[in-house]
Length: 188
Image (tube, rainbow, N blue to C red; front, side):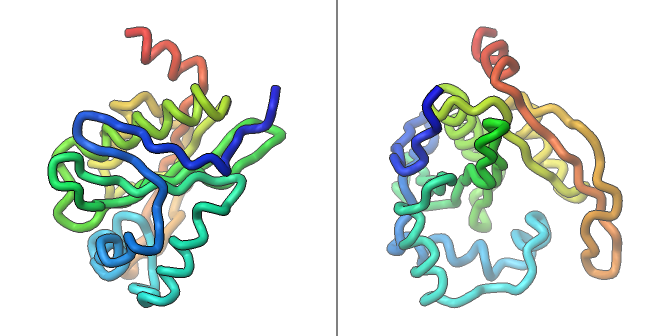
Protein backbone atom coordinates (compact mmCIF):
# COMPACT_ATOMS: atom_id res chain seq x y z
CA UNK A 1 0.00 0.00 0.00
CA UNK A 2 1.34 3.43 -0.94
CA UNK A 3 1.90 5.93 1.86
CA UNK A 4 -0.79 8.59 2.30
CA UNK A 5 -0.45 11.76 0.26
CA UNK A 6 -0.60 14.50 2.88
CA UNK A 7 0.87 17.05 0.47
CA UNK A 8 -2.35 17.10 -1.54
CA UNK A 9 -4.57 19.46 0.43
CA UNK A 10 -8.19 18.76 -0.54
CA UNK A 11 -11.35 20.81 -0.47
CA UNK A 12 -14.18 18.82 1.15
CA UNK A 13 -17.78 20.03 0.93
CA UNK A 14 -20.74 19.37 3.17
CA UNK A 15 -24.15 20.97 3.62
CA UNK A 16 -23.01 23.32 6.40
CA UNK A 17 -19.26 23.66 5.87
CA UNK A 18 -16.50 23.55 3.31
CA UNK A 19 -13.08 22.37 4.42
CA UNK A 20 -10.26 23.84 2.38
CA UNK A 21 -6.52 24.31 2.76
CA UNK A 22 -5.77 26.85 5.47
CA UNK A 23 -3.67 29.86 4.41
CA UNK A 24 -2.03 32.85 6.06
CA UNK A 25 -4.90 35.11 4.98
CA UNK A 26 -7.20 33.09 7.29
CA UNK A 27 -5.41 34.45 10.37
CA UNK A 28 -7.78 37.40 11.03
CA UNK A 29 -10.74 34.99 11.12
CA UNK A 30 -8.94 32.33 13.19
CA UNK A 31 -7.22 34.64 15.66
CA UNK A 32 -10.14 34.72 18.13
CA UNK A 33 -9.47 31.00 18.79
CA UNK A 34 -6.18 32.03 20.36
CA UNK A 35 -7.44 34.96 22.40
CA UNK A 36 -10.71 33.55 23.76
CA UNK A 37 -10.32 32.14 27.29
CA UNK A 38 -13.13 29.59 26.85
CA UNK A 39 -11.67 28.17 23.63
CA UNK A 40 -8.31 27.95 25.40
CA UNK A 41 -9.89 26.09 28.32
CA UNK A 42 -11.82 23.61 26.16
CA UNK A 43 -8.68 22.75 24.18
CA UNK A 44 -6.28 22.95 27.13
CA UNK A 45 -4.28 25.62 25.31
CA UNK A 46 -2.26 28.08 27.32
CA UNK A 47 -0.29 31.06 26.25
CA UNK A 48 -2.92 33.16 24.53
CA UNK A 49 -2.57 34.84 21.18
CA UNK A 50 0.90 34.23 19.70
CA UNK A 51 0.55 37.31 17.50
CA UNK A 52 -0.34 38.06 13.91
CA UNK A 53 3.13 37.51 12.45
CA UNK A 54 3.69 34.13 14.09
CA UNK A 55 0.21 32.90 13.16
CA UNK A 56 0.64 34.05 9.55
CA UNK A 57 3.94 32.18 9.38
CA UNK A 58 2.37 29.02 10.86
CA UNK A 59 -0.77 28.97 8.71
CA UNK A 60 1.18 30.05 5.64
CA UNK A 61 3.42 27.00 5.99
CA UNK A 62 0.66 24.38 6.33
CA UNK A 63 0.36 23.75 2.58
CA UNK A 64 3.88 22.37 2.37
CA UNK A 65 3.58 20.02 5.33
CA UNK A 66 3.84 16.30 4.69
CA UNK A 67 2.56 13.99 7.41
CA UNK A 68 -0.30 16.25 8.47
CA UNK A 69 -3.40 17.90 7.05
CA UNK A 70 -4.59 21.34 8.22
CA UNK A 71 -7.88 22.58 6.79
CA UNK A 72 -9.90 25.73 7.42
CA UNK A 73 -13.56 25.23 8.30
CA UNK A 74 -15.63 27.66 6.24
CA UNK A 75 -19.31 28.18 7.05
CA UNK A 76 -21.06 27.50 3.76
CA UNK A 77 -23.85 30.04 4.23
CA UNK A 78 -21.63 33.02 5.08
CA UNK A 79 -18.30 32.07 3.51
CA UNK A 80 -16.60 32.96 6.81
CA UNK A 81 -13.74 30.89 8.25
CA UNK A 82 -14.99 29.63 11.63
CA UNK A 83 -12.33 27.10 12.64
CA UNK A 84 -9.82 24.46 11.69
CA UNK A 85 -9.57 20.67 11.53
CA UNK A 86 -6.27 18.84 11.66
CA UNK A 87 -5.01 15.31 11.09
CA UNK A 88 -1.55 15.24 12.66
CA UNK A 89 1.02 13.05 14.37
CA UNK A 90 1.16 10.68 11.38
CA UNK A 91 2.50 7.28 12.44
CA UNK A 92 3.48 5.46 9.25
CA UNK A 93 4.16 2.11 10.93
CA UNK A 94 0.67 2.01 12.40
CA UNK A 95 -1.24 3.92 9.67
CA UNK A 96 -2.63 6.24 12.29
CA UNK A 97 -3.09 9.95 12.95
CA UNK A 98 -4.24 12.23 15.68
CA UNK A 99 -7.23 14.51 15.18
CA UNK A 100 -8.10 17.92 16.54
CA UNK A 101 -10.68 20.55 15.79
CA UNK A 102 -11.19 24.07 17.07
CA UNK A 103 -13.73 26.79 16.40
CA UNK A 104 -13.84 30.52 16.96
CA UNK A 105 -16.22 31.77 19.66
CA UNK A 106 -19.84 31.83 18.52
CA UNK A 107 -19.47 29.02 15.97
CA UNK A 108 -20.54 26.26 18.36
CA UNK A 109 -23.87 24.44 18.53
CA UNK A 110 -24.92 24.60 14.89
CA UNK A 111 -23.75 21.19 13.66
CA UNK A 112 -20.67 22.49 11.86
CA UNK A 113 -18.27 20.61 14.14
CA UNK A 114 -20.05 17.31 13.59
CA UNK A 115 -20.06 17.75 9.84
CA UNK A 116 -16.42 18.95 9.70
CA UNK A 117 -15.35 15.96 11.81
CA UNK A 118 -17.21 13.51 9.55
CA UNK A 119 -15.72 15.06 6.42
CA UNK A 120 -12.09 14.97 7.55
CA UNK A 121 -12.37 11.54 9.20
CA UNK A 122 -13.94 10.16 6.04
CA UNK A 123 -11.10 11.62 4.00
CA UNK A 124 -8.58 10.10 6.40
CA UNK A 125 -10.01 6.61 6.08
CA UNK A 126 -11.23 6.60 2.48
CA UNK A 127 -8.55 8.63 0.69
CA UNK A 128 -5.47 8.58 2.92
CA UNK A 129 -6.00 4.92 3.84
CA UNK A 130 -5.60 5.41 7.59
CA UNK A 131 -6.37 2.54 9.94
CA UNK A 132 -6.82 4.55 13.16
CA UNK A 133 -7.63 8.15 14.06
CA UNK A 134 -7.39 9.17 17.72
CA UNK A 135 -7.97 12.18 19.93
CA UNK A 136 -8.14 13.30 23.54
CA UNK A 137 -11.04 15.25 25.00
CA UNK A 138 -11.06 16.91 28.42
CA UNK A 139 -13.73 16.09 30.98
CA UNK A 140 -14.96 19.70 31.00
CA UNK A 141 -15.79 19.52 27.28
CA UNK A 142 -18.82 17.19 27.09
CA UNK A 143 -20.16 18.96 23.98
CA UNK A 144 -17.07 17.90 22.01
CA UNK A 145 -17.25 14.37 23.37
CA UNK A 146 -20.87 14.08 22.17
CA UNK A 147 -19.78 15.19 18.68
CA UNK A 148 -17.00 12.61 18.59
CA UNK A 149 -19.34 9.85 19.77
CA UNK A 150 -21.97 10.86 17.21
CA UNK A 151 -19.39 10.54 14.43
CA UNK A 152 -18.31 7.11 15.73
CA UNK A 153 -15.29 7.63 17.99
CA UNK A 154 -15.07 5.15 20.87
CA UNK A 155 -13.71 5.90 24.34
CA UNK A 156 -10.62 3.81 25.04
CA UNK A 157 -9.62 5.02 28.46
CA UNK A 158 -8.98 7.95 30.73
CA UNK A 159 -5.77 9.83 31.29
CA UNK A 160 -6.29 10.76 34.91
CA UNK A 161 -5.33 14.28 35.96
CA UNK A 162 -3.92 14.93 32.49
CA UNK A 163 -4.31 18.70 32.70
CA UNK A 164 -4.07 21.21 35.51
CA UNK A 165 -6.40 24.10 34.76
CA UNK A 166 -7.09 26.96 37.17
CA UNK A 167 -5.71 24.93 40.06
CA UNK A 168 -7.88 21.87 39.32
CA UNK A 169 -6.85 18.54 37.83
CA UNK A 170 -8.84 17.51 34.75
CA UNK A 171 -9.07 14.04 33.18
CA UNK A 172 -8.77 13.48 29.42
CA UNK A 173 -10.59 10.68 27.64
CA UNK A 174 -8.69 8.98 24.83
CA UNK A 175 -10.99 8.17 21.92
CA UNK A 176 -10.39 6.58 18.55
CA UNK A 177 -12.06 5.26 15.46
CA UNK A 178 -10.80 2.40 13.29
CA UNK A 179 -11.29 2.08 9.55
CA UNK A 180 -13.70 -0.90 9.88
CA UNK A 181 -15.82 1.10 12.34
CA UNK A 182 -15.97 3.99 9.88
CA UNK A 183 -17.09 1.62 7.12
CA UNK A 184 -19.83 0.14 9.33
CA UNK A 185 -21.03 3.60 10.38
CA UNK A 186 -21.21 4.72 6.74
CA UNK A 187 -23.21 1.63 5.78
CA UNK A 188 -25.96 2.43 8.29
